Image (cartoon, rainbow, N blue to C red):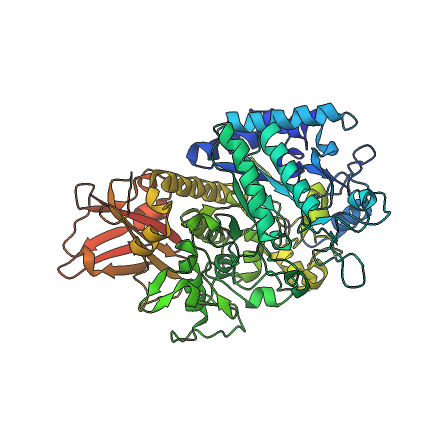
Length: 621
C-alpha cells in the first residue's frame, strides 16, 4: 500500500501511503497502472491491507532518512533506528482479519473511514479496468497467550492456535501458528473472506504460507466465496498462494495446501521452478553464492562470472540445459503431464530431487520471477551479471525474463515496478526497511539502485554486505532511456498475451497436444524455442493463427533456429505466411526490428533473433 504512493509527489499529501491514493487518477502511479491495464494487465495484488499489529496507526511517525549513495550506511542506520515507530511494515502480522488497516485510512481513529476508503480504492481500480487481489494471512497470528495483540487465544485459550505435544503454540510459520483444521478457525477464515468478497468487492485472494492451511479448508472457503460472487454475476474468484512443503510436524496433522496437493483444485501456487531457472540459484543463497549461481537471463554457460565453472558440456549434466528444461515446463503451465520430449513428462524433469511439473490445470501455475520476498529481479541480476554487462544490456536481459512470465501458460504474476527495473538497493527482505529502500519511481527517472547498504538486521542483508557493497559502488544506476525501453517491451508482451489466446490456453489437453519445444535435442545455451499450434490443434481459438513460434534469446549473440515444418513458407502476412507478431512489429524495439528475420529453404525455415531478445513469430491461417 505505502510503496504505491508514499513517495509519489503527484499524489496529494493527505493521500500518500493510503487507500485514497488509488482514487487519484492523474497521479504518476495511477497513470502507469491505467497504461498497463490498457495493454493487458488484469489485477493488482496488494500486500496485507487488513488490520495488522506492527504499526500503531495513532502514534507512528515518518522519519527523515538521509539520502545515501553507493554502499554508505547513513540511510541504513536511520531506518533501523525508526523500525518499530515508523508507519512502515508489510503487515504479515495479522491482528483482526475482518477489518481494513487503520494506518492506510485518512482518519485511523474512525472505523467507518477505514471501511469507506477501502471501498473507494476498490471502486477506483475497477473503474480503471483492474481487479483487486488481497493478500491474506490465515496461517498465523501476530501473538498468542496474554499478549495485548493476541485476539483469538484470549477468546478461547489454546483452541485457535496449533499446539505441539506439550501444549505449546507452534511457530513453524515464523509466528504463532493457527489451527485451521479446527472448525471455528476454518469458519473464521471463510466468514472473513466472504466479507471481503461481498462487502468490499475484492476479486481474488493470495494466501500467505498457504501450506500451513488444510487443503479441505481452502476448498471450503473457495466454494463459499464463489457462491457470493456468482450471486453478484462476478464469476469465479481466484485463489492462489505459497504451496511450499511445510514442516513434517504440520503434515502429520493436516493434508497441507501444497503445490502437489492443490493439483486439480484450480487453486494456484507459485512456481519456484521457473523462478529459479530464470534468476539462477535459490532464495536461500547469500554472499558469494549469489554471484556464483547464474541463471538463464544473466549468463549461465554463455557469459560466466570469473572463477565459476558449472557443467556447460552440453551433455546430460549440463547446468544451463537443466534450468532451461524447468523453464520450458513452466511455460507449458507447469503441467505434470506435459510431454517435454519423447518419454519425458513435466513430472519427470528434476527439480532438486522432486518433480518440476506438478499442476493438472494451467490456472494452478502462477508463473513469476520476483515478488516482494527476496531481491527484486534487477537486484538479483546485479549480483549475477559479469562486470562488463552494460546498463542497457542488463535492461534487455530483464525484458527477456519478464517475457518468460507474461507468455507462460497459466497465470502471469509480476512484482510491482519490475517493468521499471525496480531496485531496493539489494535488500533481500524489505518488510521493515521503510519507505526509503522500498521506494518506487513511477516516472521512470531512476530505479532506487545504489542508495546505501540495506538494513543489516533483516533477511540475508548482513551475510550479503561484503558481496553487495562493491556492486553498489561500481554498478551504475540505470538511465531513464533504459528504464523506458524495458517498460515499453513489458507493455508489448502484455499486448501479445492479450491479443493471442494461444498464450492463455485453458486446458491441459490443449497444452499437452499443441505446445512443444523443438529445441529439445538441439539445445543452445541461453536460448529456448517454443511452438504453439493454433487452428486445427487447439479446441478453440480466436487468434485466427496456425500457430506461433517464440525464440527466448537471453544469450549475448544473435541466434537462429530452423524448423522443418516451415520449409517453403514465405515471410509476410498472407495466408500460410510467417511474420513477427503485429504487436512487436508496431513496437519500438529497434534492435528487434533491425535484427529479426525469417528465411525459408527447401528443407526448413529459419528464424533469426538478436541477442537478449524475445521474438514472437506468427503463422497466419
